[in-house]
Image 1: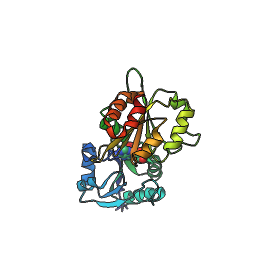
Image 2: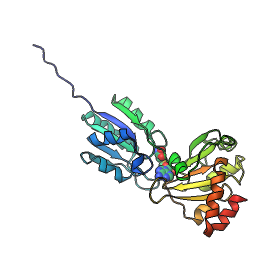
Image 3: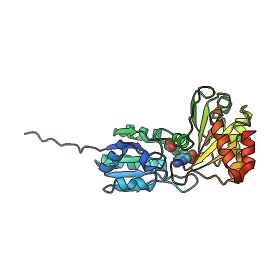
Image 4: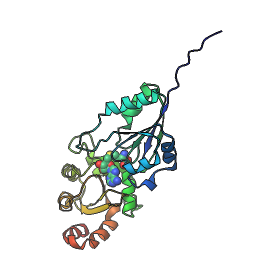
Length: 264
Ligand code: SAH
């Protein structure tokens, strides 16, 4: 009689987009996976409200908010691999969508290298939630034929083609731009974008405390400071925003200076 030494079956990892904050924007698939997860690794941006959907799971917080102490990326990758090898069903929850600015590529590489089965479940990215909050379309058949999702992280470096973007007539949706508004502004102006181009920042899109700040490329640094714009916020830049910017600015009776700049 032959003895079969069976290798323990490894688990599976789901990289899941949690959406921008409003729990109702979570996909049904994400909710189903959360309800059957053994372990959930959660980002700060994903928000704790979703945890009500996985009371059975072991929760590991792996927060990474800009500027604060954060869990090193390599440690998160090791955790994912370790938990999956232990046979667990692991949900790795990320704010917004998995494939945008969430370091998913490193996690995918680590899972591939360890031979662990995984799936990606998309989520609503912050930029789309911002457009919804503004009741606006990011494209416009007359003056915006596409959208670029960009991080301002390398705003001062040469790695982002700001000149090409400034001249592209695309709507620019800029992530992580609050702290780098000044270098973003300088790069866009140097790249040839008109200072009069509308910019609408949406803070906490989809959440109860969402708010928008309306400005122009030339005035955005001052206006963001004036209105204490805080992270997380996305900046939506381009002509597709003009009609909404004019309307929002005209409602901001206490900030007529802002309104005047946008409408001018
Ligand atoms: N994967 C995420 C982005 C992570 S990068 C997504 O797809 O949305 C973090 C940046 O996302 C923040 O600095 C901010 O620019 C943006 N962000 C995330 N949640 C947001 C929200 N609710 N409202 C506005 N911006 C948000």
